[in-house]
Length: 320
Image (cartoon, rainbow, N blue to C red; front, side, top):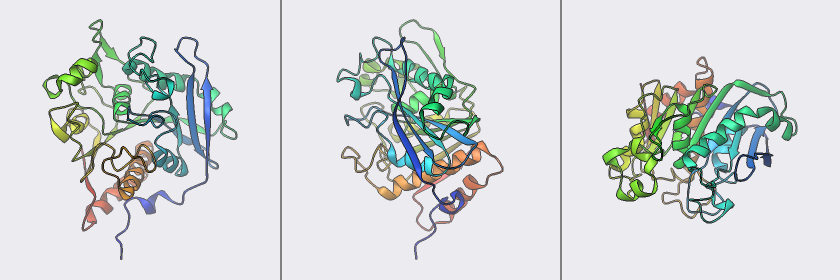
């Protein structure tokens, strides 16, 4: 008999999901209007919001509102409204991703996209049939994978020094009360490769010491990201190790940068394809968010207890 799947029993039955795209927010001050995918359960009220930031993968379309269906669909089916923007560095906006932002460094414009969504939630609600009046705006989380994890970390309180003008950048948004970082970049300095320093100089000064918002960091213990860092898989643990609590860390055994394939179903670029791992990430992150929004909800504690009790666990959880 198979052992119980962590968090499956505490999340309840999934609801049907309505997903609408593109939802377009006119943005005259942006290179192009901001396009979103919004996924929500067809029933329920007081729904928390999760802003999901895509990475910079090799696929032509997944690094956009079209990606991360295994997470977005699951989260929406279990009571969250998931909003996915297409950032200005998406390949869907042109092949030259380095200049797709019209000269604006994408690390900053990405965070600005998320703040714009929160500023204009009324428009988002009205654009999705049946969604108006169903959001709980006091419960907002940000999640992101890879470069999207960097975006999320800035909104959660991480800081950096602008490589162009030397100013300290503070992009934390107090409306965001929880976060999920998936294979997110770690510290700068001597942890970076020459390639990273040349192409992503904003990584050099990443500072997690004031990232105080409650956050779950998800890292694969085989995610060496060798073209970005010389620190190995531990680099992706930095947002947990170097930030103040409360934080939790989910380490996935055998997982590489795709964490089993979270960016999309049957993605060829996934080097560690594992549908069970993807399902586990979806369940554990949903359980974390549910308890982060409602401390009386036992979902996260129960999920952790179930994982620890397995004879052959797929990962481990620690918290501080």
